[in-house]
Image (cartoon, rainbow, N blue to C red; front, side):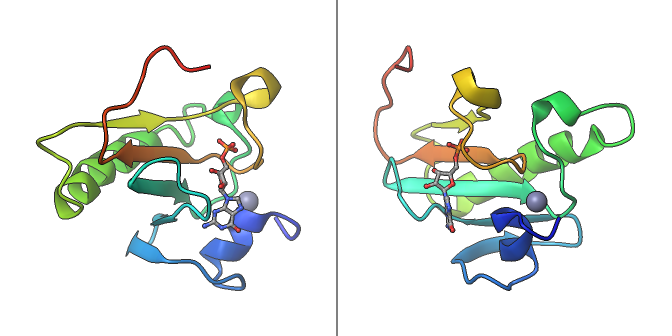
Length: 114
Ligand code: 5GP
Ligand code: ZN
């Protein structure tokens, strides 16, 4: 999608600090980190939100979780623990309309979220 910031990051039209990429997904450092490790994992395909996941594209979610596990190992937080977050819609706190999963770790994270 031409006016989507994460599509532009996936196309490398906007620079980002990439930690992993393959033919289907991209993982890069969040520009405003909320934890010592804060990675965003996105599909290259534009999917607006979790509300757009269906039988045709659901496989990407399991792939993203598998790669989150790999990145957690690479970042040294596999043993200490981490959180994978998807914000959906206004009340979910979604601010970028291209589905993304936050991988957060490197400190103890509080619960419940605000
Ligand atoms: P959301 O609030 O939609 O769940 O998360 C969007 C995230 O994208 C935020 O944590 C924000 O800091 C991050 N973000 C927004 N614009 C950019 C950008 O241009 N580059 C990077 N690396 N992260 C961004
Ligand atoms: Zn997009």
